[in-house]
Length: 305
Image 1 (cartoon, rainbow, N blue to C red):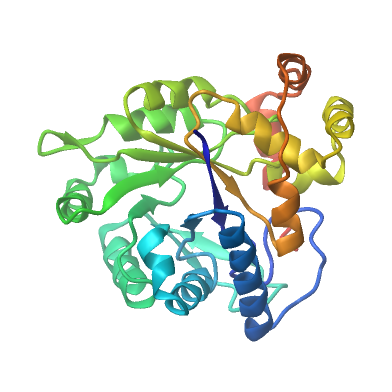
Image 2: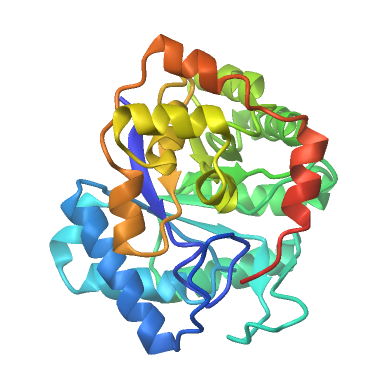
């Protein structure tokens, strides 16, 4: 069965690329409290998988503190983090640059040490936003260093973004070190507006790779102004468009984990509202996909709020 997870991209820093946020600039302590309340709601709903990243502001710190408050949580949770971007906004909502990407051996070593210090050893450690032009593909020492984590029992994966997601998935999963696949998990953007990576994810799933899907509500676009077919299906099932959008992802046979990016407990509960989509529902929703270039052009134009 498809598993739901909570991603803390919108809960570890005061701004994020998302529409429909409340616009409140919270202090570190205020956002920590909100993150912990959302984690509490997730746990109560049965969620046991949590996803953070070095670039998500203080998300690793917030998650670590919440896990430490009850030792049974870490024993029963699956924790993933990512390296590759660093957070640069320093809690300034008006910062010109919020995060900087670097796929280098030095950066990996630095961020892995930071993750271990703050969060401990995650169950899954991912390259953040692996694209086909990443220097990782030609960096043998970096690949060997990553393989060292694999040898220590840490599962390795990568996330993808952009119109070349499918190529990045295939190239990333083809990488081998010492005769074994370097990565056995992939986290990609797939939603009702952006389905281009679907065939590559299906191939990955069939090969035994763990497939996680992020940005299921298209950074809020499917919720704030839902397309008419999505709104109609949501009305028919008496749930929000977010619940339908995530249920449509869970209905895909190649998906193992669906990430909720909820920014508060109420959003999380709305995301998880039970809904059983019919074949007719899925057919109606299947016409919403846009060309990948068009989708990602709009995504890049979104502001940090």
